[in-house]
Image 1 (cartoon, rainbow, N blue to C red):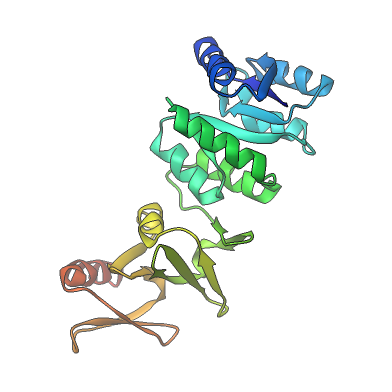
Image 2: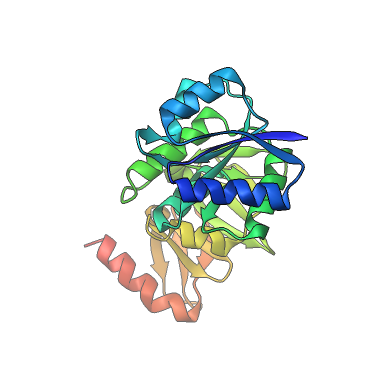
Length: 249
C-alpha cells in the first residue's frame, strides 16, 4: 500500500483526484490533503507520503514554495498543472513529468507508474522548471535531456545541432560531446522553434547561431562554424535563406 497527499487550492479538483485515486488505484491511500502552501507544510512536517500530488499555482504561493520548505523531501512528486502551453514547454525543458488538467484515467495511471519507478528530479531540474515557468517569453538558459540511463543538463547555447536517429535524437555539442536522447526530433523541433533553432531537413535541427554560410550549389546545404555541412530540404530552402538574410542584416 502506498500513501499519497494531494495539494491543490481548487476544492473540486482536489476531490476529483481523490475520488479517481480511490476508484482506480486502490493500492494508493490518500492520507491527507492541503489547499495552500501553509497547509501543505503542516501536513508534510507530520508525515511525508510516498507520492505527493502537487499543484503548481496555490492561493498563497506555488508548489515550488512547498519544495523549498522541504529540500530533502522523500516523496515522489507528481506535478499537476492546468492546460497551458507555456507550462507544458517548461516541464519539457526540465524533463519533469506532469499531469495536465483535465486529465484522463490513462494520464493519471501513467504518471503514477512513472512516479513509482523514477528517482526525484534534482534541484537544478526544479530550477529550470521554475525559471522557464516564471519567464515564458524568455529563452531558457538550460535544457534537461533524457538519455537511456540518466538525465543530462546542458546549456542551450552549447547545442550546435540535433539529428534524427529513428525515434531518437542525437545532440551535438560545442565541446564535441554527442548525447543520445530517447525523444523524437519533432519533439525538440517543436520545443526549440522559438529559440533560434530551425528544422532545415527531416533529419536535422540546427542552432542558427552556429551557421556560417548557406551554400546554394549541390542542392543547397549549410556550412556550420564547426566545419560540418548539413543538407537543406527543397521545401525548407526559401525559409532558410530568408531567416539567414534577416539574421545578417
